[in-house]
Length: 226
Image (cartoon, rainbow, N blue to C red; front, side, top):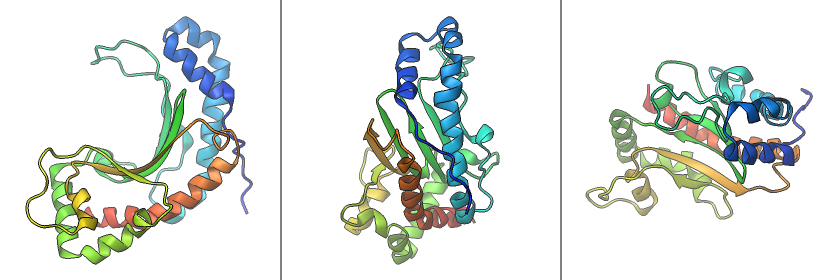
């Protein structure tokens, strides 16, 4: 059994995000660089490490290298009106590497100064992917319902998020499917305010158990891409 290394984030993690939100400039960041490295970046890398074995069991092609999947602190401001140089949150995504990553399913985690969240979905789905998704629900509804059965169970922690079409789908749809037809993109997510779980090793265990529940739906979505 692999040794677990994640000890939890800390109050210094979220204090850093609050600070950089209010002082988004180089001098403040340089003064707090060591806090960022020790209390933001390191625990994020440790969390990725602890989850990596599970992720590779779910999908051997998925990227689990922390330096490649954990977000950089620096913002790309070349084409942005907002010239703030630093991000005010940290996130990572377990996805297959490749040029079409934005139109493929992936698992994520995110934390900032007052909340954290995790889940899985397709965050920038193309019309072709949504079309294939709807056709799959139409032709094999039982397969979709089986892959998402955990989502409808009482006591489940996930909610459906994403951008919705303004008009509801045409025609009569099964009520279990109707909300999915309305989505332009979609992801299942769990969001929480700051709590003891974030600051303890328990977070990795909870994420592991919940990612396992998401795995059948992840595999279902990959089938849509062929």
